[in-house]
Length: 326
Image (cartoon, rainbow, N blue to C red; front, side, top):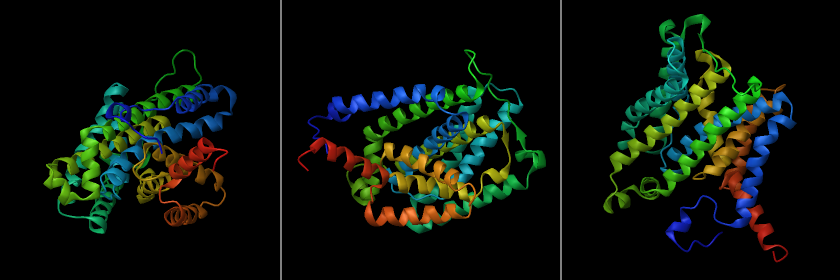
């Protein structure tokens, strides 16, 4: 682990020259990838960027604040259908996307109220009930979900003469980078430290002056905002929305992304998002195997590497940093 000598150094996103080199190399690869790979791979990478945003939000709630939620599919649906209705009424996509995040964030604030009294499995069950209720409402309301035809979303016209798949790739890459930077800023701020204090010991956090009600609700609202943005971006990419796109399995997917990627890790959230997107692609011919792989992976991670994929990556970096003295 890096030795941090000052708070200013801790606030730096990338501290070491070697780290700056591989981060720059990664960004360069992401920029040129659409031009050197197949369109299908570009599409999968775009999906990973979108899921990364929801995974980052879920990690802020579970990994940093210690609040377990299984209602993320509901916030996905709220964000997606809010964006869909904005699109139907001709509202510009930036406003529609912000509206999607805000709508999900408001409901997240409301759902967060039980977190003031409930913990652990009780909170998980309460949020699970909310997720199921929202799905049933959308599934049985033609006004909200568009009925059997669903909602058709107007896609953004590509700019600079780019192919649509490449435009979608860069568009979602930029938004994913912005939310990643936002996440690093949140966890480095007083707010992020308050989240961590609540996760570690909420009674001690309250004693030292952390407002539990404010920061628990804020954590739910921010996490839901991220998920609402994910829902809006997903609808924009697909150009179509219907309730069966937001079943309980979507909540499980985001939960798996956080656990597999690594709790309390922004980089791990992105790795976890890549995992939950790529696994169904590898088992596209045997979809019944996907839950089995998820469950097995969670067991292996919890037993052998509690820090998840990010923990494995940190060990690899440490190995090569100390080589040949290992």
